[in-house]
Length: 403
Image 1 (cartoon, rainbow, N blue to C red):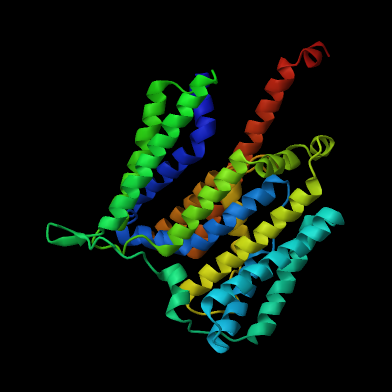
Image 2: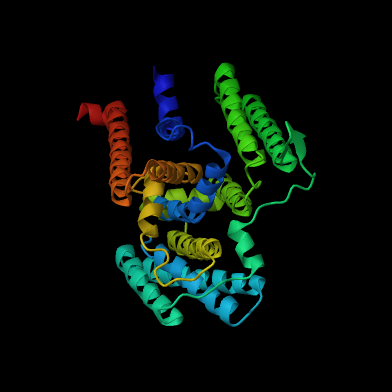
């Protein structure tokens, strides 16, 4: 029973994703899992997924950034002026926008980390400031269209370098199949190697049947992606999915296997203890906000490229969606807890709910009601689990028991 309970706590968010996906697959009469809709689901949630990675790190430190939606709009406004009007090359504008995002993040980090100004005040002020700057830069008007090389970032697809494969008279994307097979093999080798190393050093490992089951589940998921993106009704692997995949790998490695990652969790878990341990918590918070500014600017570029237009009201409400994704994905409002994959999963749960209800013809207002209820349920669950762990810890403490 304890194994099942621990397994549910560890993989509960993924079980929830599967349940929500299957539920809306049934409610939409099979439309949700159609390859064109899966591609649309990735494209329309890509910028939320990108920002969810950065927001998770901010929340792990025990803080929040309310300005990300306005940074998205500002990034779009800058790219609109520099590319659509001034004709500057795309690569240069991308660098400029990301640098602006880093400067914004450094501005937030300076006041929050080094001057102890409440993060709520700093980022709320930023939300209003960058929205106003966006209005000024665009003069209240839209800017566009953008050149093809800029649009390809969010609306383009990787070509089939192998020319495709003919199955039943339909051409399937062979490159997408090969990529998914390679990813599956890398995953198997990586997991098997980690298990062997753990056993060599006599560390605790999951049982062999559960290990095999976990491998099969992940391979099945990869197989679904191979089907979706290789199908003749699909255009292949979206470019933005490659960008997102790279970010997930980099940030998952950083948070799980680097000193910086451990310092981020220590800062959010117990700041005073972290400082006494020699961790420069102010620097950690500063760089987490710099990182958030860069990722919000990247999301702004992706959003603008997909819309092919820079608009003054871009990004409105994005900050709430991103924060919701992080909390639904398991991040704790108390700090110290949260995973990159959890945030991605939380964002996909919200995306599937909105997409599924959109297919069913449910109003946007009702979609927000459902998303709000899901967010509240996720936070309540996280708080209850934490309280339960605290009670168990205290009950196991001899001094607490004697008291």
